[in-house]
Image (cartoon, rainbow, N blue to C red; front, side):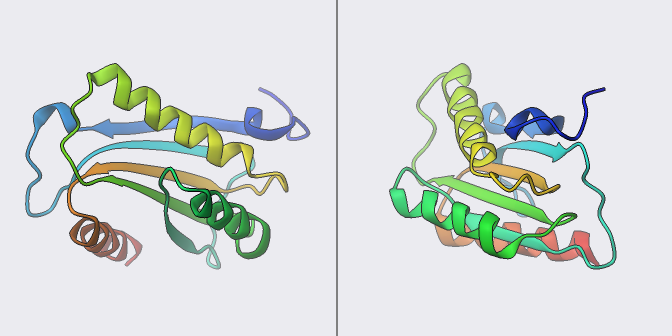
Length: 145
């Protein structure tokens, strides 16, 4: 096991993710998405842990939003749910969207310059932006309670 003094994203462990994109259609309770989960090796959720949801896309303001969130809001034990919504059908092969999602996750991890011990979930979803966010918020609220 590596020490907690390791730099950057080397301090994160991958956990079980989900991929229902190849199956096609979303259901009432599930979005069509690829979910990636990583946790800092020092991550421990506690009573004061919070969940932050942030939208990410290919624009520079997404980079600023993630950086600001990591630098100004999160503390050790918090969870970040980053949501990347593709409003058009995924017309790339399975490897392409999985690689794209991995690159988005690596970009988020690289921005954790303060080495917060957080959990990061990337929801790489296909659907309409507003309804996808609403489903994800509803799901997260049910899990939190």
